[in-house]
Amino acid sequence: MAKVMAVNCGSSSLKFKLYEMPEEKVITSGIVERIGHEDAIFQIKVGDNKLKEIVNVKDHGVAVQLVMDAMIKHHIIEDIHEIKATGHRVVQGGPYFSESTPFNEDTYKKIESLIPLAPLHNQAHLVGYDAFKKVLPNTPAIAVFDTAFHQTMGPEDYSYPIKKEYAEKYMIRRYGAHGTSHKYLTEIGHELLGNKENKRLIICHLGSGASITATRDGKCVATSMGLTPLGGIMMNTRTGDMDPSVYYQIQKMSGKSYEEIFQEFNKQSGLYGVSGTSNDSRDVEDAANGGNKDAQLALDLWARRIADFIGQYYVRLGGCDMIIFSAGIGENSPESRDMIIDRCKEALGIELDAEKNKCRGVLREISTPESKIKVYVIPTDEEVMIARDAYKLIKE
Ligand code: AMP
Image 1 (cartoon, rainbow, N blue to C red):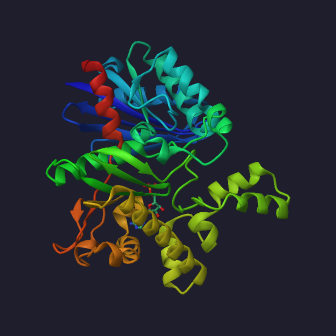
Image 2 (image 1 turned 90 degrees about the vertical axis):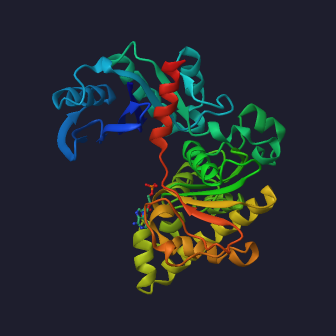
């Protein structure tokens, strides 16, 4: 038995989950938000209670110490050295990492070199790693990449039709994202299908960030997110794929800088931009139900773009054995699942069971026995995948 911590560091946050492995029992979890502020928010689960404090957290180092002190104070652990490994989520692994990798000088440098491809994320992951290294200098750490699962894509699926020089010099290609979630869901999907060969899955990870992945035999064949998380399907605040000249035209007409428009495409577009209401899909659904036409268009466009990707991946895989819905919207919004399937069911012979599709947040088959493709809701769990890989590291 060993305690292993899954860590997700953002530029001003630190999320953690401590597991007892190999049982995968969650011992505690929590978050430090607003790092860098005097009124940072620290939350930690102690038994069934969630404790919350407002504290001065000047940097990630203070945040890590805060988490360790709280775990000792509440007797979650008696000594920080009970933590035998940490697993750190890393958003961008570029072309270098096709699996989780122990942190060492080389790993660190490669993650650092990829900062231009994921400026906010990779930088923050390294700051987080450094902070843990200070507090737990001899505890093995492992980097778990969001992009690793997608490294099995072939050039036909990951290349962009741009000048070769750009692709090579600037490492411009599709890397994808949410790989840890897609891998987890693929594994569960295969178990549900009896672990048989030649199975083809279309996985819809629909959270505020969202992506769709096509897998065959448990490996990624194609994924919707691109060079950055801006690509692919329409999301809560991101555009997803568009004619690249939209960028050019808006820049020319508005006089705004490319940087400003890039931020708008990431943070003020998608469901939010089209509906003009909110970046939370629940609010957009409420607005549409109240007769807001822009909100209705936003939802229709969202569902259409997802259904189009499902159709594209059905062709890419030469068929499909299972469609999986997951993440915040995929797990919790029957209406959204219905809207998506409605737009591809005729061509693909899919039948949803309306009663079963009412489920929220649980693993459930939601298609009828007659449906040509099985459709499942499967709650995702990225943290347990991080803990599994970190535990593997100390066992080897
Ligand atoms: P995630 O990024 O996976 O945490 O997902 C966040 C998104 O899930 C937000 O847009 C939420 O509106 C959406 N979401 C969470 N709970 C529900 C719910 N009960 N019904 C519909 N959408 C939900």
